[in-house]
Amino acid sequence: QVQLVESGGGLVRPGDSLRLSCAASGGTFTTLTFGWFRQGPGKEGEFVATIDWQDRTILYSDSVKGRFSITRDNGKNMVYLQRNNIQFHDTGVYYCGAGSGTTILIPRSCRYYSWGQGTLFIVSP
Image (cartoon, rainbow, N blue to C red; front, side):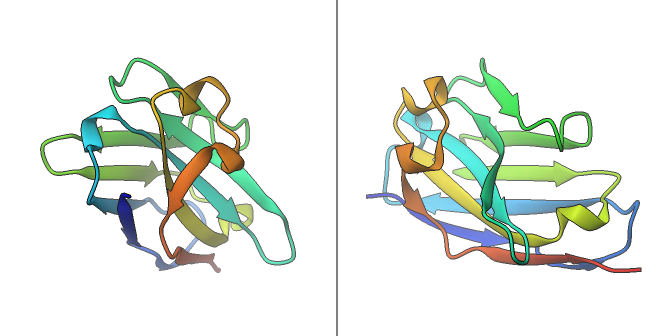
């Protein structure tokens, strides 16, 4: 079972840029699909981005497309979420999830079998 630890949350202002990191251990990193999900205050969890094990398929939610970028470093067992032009509605707890190679086909949260503890990210003026 792969273990995930997110980092990089904090307090930022609208328009800022910030990168979240997800460190993975205990699994075969190169065969896994990874995704980022978030849950804003008083909101349900929502899909943000996902990347397959070969970097061939990368998907984003409409709310972050063009502003966020998901990448992975197979040599370091790391997954990143670069966020640019951050907006108020980006506030929330961000979770990194790991799934099998076929998770990328239907990237719903229920198809990711390992999750990190989450990292809090607040956008404030």
